[in-house]
Image 1 (cartoon, rainbow, N blue to C red):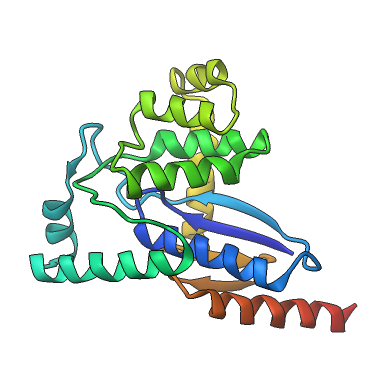
Image 2: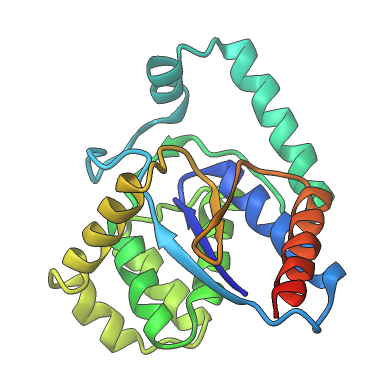
Length: 213
């Protein structure tokens, strides 16, 4: 089974969705062989390098009041805790394009999932800038990627075209919100669903595949 997880590092519901999906995969067990790939999506592709105050950004983008933002943060903390992810304070929103370039490269190196986890924790748990080259290089070192190679990628436009092509592809497929989980190029599950929802879908699709065989 192939799973494409379309998401952005800056998206808190993507952290919830990923950890829920992984819990569902644990429940289903090793009899289901899964290839999990992370695909790029930018919530704020025009975000400048210096970022923006998160509360101001969300209020302007979604028209959310301080009370609504506080309620959403409380919900995220609860949903995250249920699947083993810790949300801290996230005072700023930053550009994530370089993070996506490194995730693309990490996929070629077989370390994509590890880097994705590290990026989500750096931003959503520790409020670190996922666009900072210093942060990105440290995270690459933490997950066993070649830091010198990562530095060369960040100092160039390498993989920029590949990331933009992937973003265009999923937009053309109608993906306008994340997380979007695409199973075997045919089945779409959207949003930060609980593990039970992913588990039901995985079991059903696996059973259907067996019946077709």
